[in-house]
Length: 300
Image (cartoon, rainbow, N blue to C red):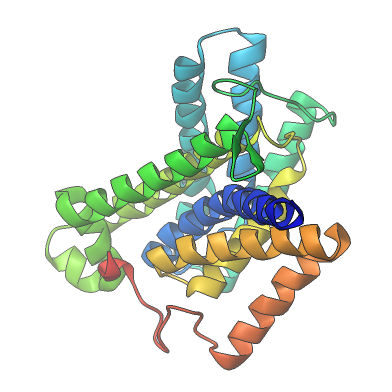
């Protein structure tokens, strides 16, 4: 019985870690999409997640429209915000240094957080799960259906993005713009449009992350900063610019946090993840899957 209880605990912590790690992976993918095209670290990526959760709450519980339509409208709304951020904040400063661009994204993060506080207030919001609230038992662990939604949607996004960048002309144009901007321009590719699309796509992915995690964890105006920081840590751990590395690292960070919280103390989970990140970067500065020269989207 004791062995069964321990086995159930391990499965429970693993499922929790994979669920949270899925969100970190999606945020890390958003970081990498923009970085690969612009070499900018978008520190407003966490705010896209926060806005995804809050817009979903608004459409589903205030306007009372169906969940699929609320999902679609939320992704569209946050994507528009991402495109507007690029058009009105990033594009006018296109000739500025990378450091200046990063500072601009930090300013956008603060602005979006302030707008969310003004629009939704400081109270946390909940969202009903997509399907049943009742957990089912798997190997002694209670698994909530919403966790399966999180994992499933994450895997679907990874599959769709892989197909997009490998098999579509627009996706290959983004890869070309990331790999060699001058050559892409000579081939007639509108690199400015690719930059705009990268911001819109990363905002859409952030919105999806916010939507699927809100039924499990409450969403509020200041949650984006912490989620963005964890996602950035996953992006760096996997190798900045490496698509699949972000997914693996996101899961790894989530599992480390979950097992540390379960077997040691929840107060040390952030420190444990940071310690592993520092150790990996000390031994391999380019990250787990990165090379000395940061890998570009051509790895899709």
